[in-house]
Image 1 (cartoon, rainbow, N blue to C red):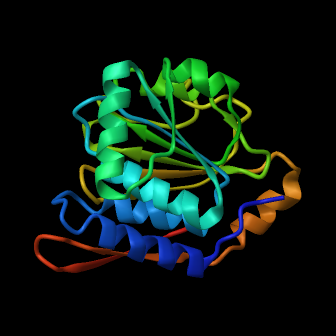
Image 2: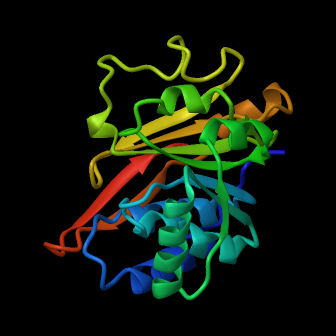
Amino acid sequence: MKLVWSPDAASNAYIDTVKSCENIKESGVAELLSAMAAGWNAKLIVEAWTHGGPITTSIGLAIAARHTCARHVCIVPDERSRLAYVKAMYDVVGWVSEVIVRQAEEVLGELKGVDFLVVDCTSKDFARVLRFARFSNKGAVLAFKNAFQRSSSGFRWQGQGVLDRGTRVVRSVFLPVGQGLDIVHVGSTSGSGSGESMNKNHSRWIKHVDQKSGEEHFFRGKF
């Protein structure tokens, strides 16, 4: 099996996220991630959040999960963060996804079949947390927010202990959205044939509208 792109699901999730976040003045990262999670028909969406952090990404992922009937898990470090997250989500979308109060590496070590994972590069231990993730055998999409703030120069996904040595990176693309968005597509584990089919996929055009200036930006990449 492999991830299969659905443009209709991506479009619907994108539009719903734009409507939900129209009164929140933040970057368009949430809309893009929502479209990607829904477009790739993700079934286990995982993110981490802490008190005081932006809520728009969580809104976008929750909307994507509704479109794909996915399990959306948000990992928070303490009860204070859980209460703040639940309130923020109810205030905007009227529902809340599954919230787990524990350390991210502990939860990721137990969750099987993650196929859409969002990581914040401002977290000093984001690379270590990644090593605990148990990805779906059909592949996974990893999204890294705030990539401009990543401290490591000459950063590489493989060869620096960020991803396991056996993890196959099919495609990666950097998008200058928000504080930088790094997208990595991890290949399936069903055999070499799936890797070949992914390499033959056509490029995808992603449209991003700057909420402040109204300018439209188009990014092309393979995942």
